[in-house]
Length: 313
Image (cartoon, rainbow, N blue to C red; front, side, top):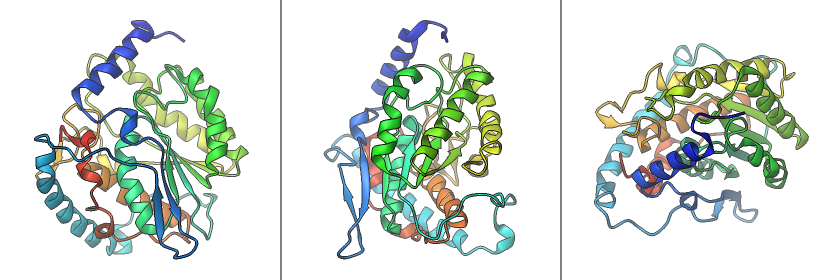
């Protein structure tokens, strides 16, 4: 398929977004893995999550971020103890796959996936679950620009990761016709099934599109519908997590007086990443009874929020 302005437009946008937000390069996260230590049964992380501590003004805002996340952790903990009536109104489908043991979790997605990967890594580590992120800057999509190149390596990468669960954060690059989106998502279901894993699509947060995204909003608005259709036809091999429960219908820069979304209108701030992570773990707990998510205060304020990729927050 072709894109307005060609591949150069996409590359230029990735370059500009990276320049606007230091720390957004792929090296910020790289391949992160949280593994279970067989001797102590305490999780041990392998791989670097962050670079050297920042000495910029962004780094000096870490204390404010820490205070906000501490308050958020307390609020999330209170939500954890909420009554059954407060639970999401749409429980998982009766044929949703479940297991009694937490699987290794593999995350796929774009730079928004990289945002939440930092929080997920901390949360899964605290919960004793192995985690790896293959989310990538300016891509990670299975349909749309550069997806053909992505498919050249993705099946082998998924096989090598040996996950029990694959989470695909629907990306801001999932452009294309309905047929192209369906083909990409069905191919992903088959790829995940080939390694005996389950696939969970996660709908993307609402964005404030700029001139780069505006021509593709019809495609992005259709993508969750296509994912739902593919999941419904997958015989229980895939499901869609409706993250609108976290974000609402519209982009919202702040919540409870704290930054929740990046001012660029696309990405997440630490609070948003923490809220999405807490919600995702709740969703996984209902599907994998062997998973006992750690309390938010065990992972929300462990240093990941000071990563440079959140500098604009």
